[in-house]
Length: 223
Image (cartoon, rainbow, N blue to C red; front, side, top):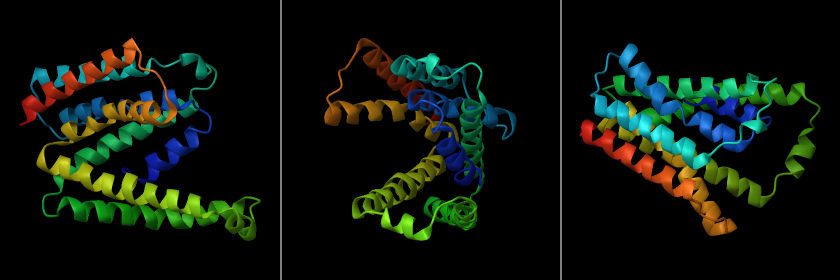
């Protein structure tokens, strides 16, 4: 529920109303929430260098994204707050995974996705029939390209990604694994640079360097 159902749905809903750049920035708060939850609820202990590394990585992400706050109206903070809550849910989930000792990371990933599907499928059906959609219209709009794209998102970006994420938690820690959120905007821009011919700027290079240095500091303490 906390690792898939709630954040997946809340973020998808929020991104209908919030710019993707702002959403990426808010999701990137997850490593800091993971650290705070580890310290306060799971009684983990970290050296000051670990905390410095996380903060440095967070600053690097902000510099990398250089978000435009004008894209979020001051009168409507509801959807940005939903994304922040999603980051907190992710952080709780990452810490809870570390407490499960008797199951392998792949088993945990499969059970997590299975439970998410169990709750999401009935909810999706309910919301579908509550709307004005017709089954025939929905089926006719599904193309082979969209079906393959959705399948790749489910298998690669969810199934395999969660398995790797849980393995990192098992072998290292929730705080270490959560740093992957800092790299999301970096790789996002990399694909944009390769496929959309976007241009590198100074803030991108400086932000990326801070993220790498922050990751090095955290990893050095968690070996």
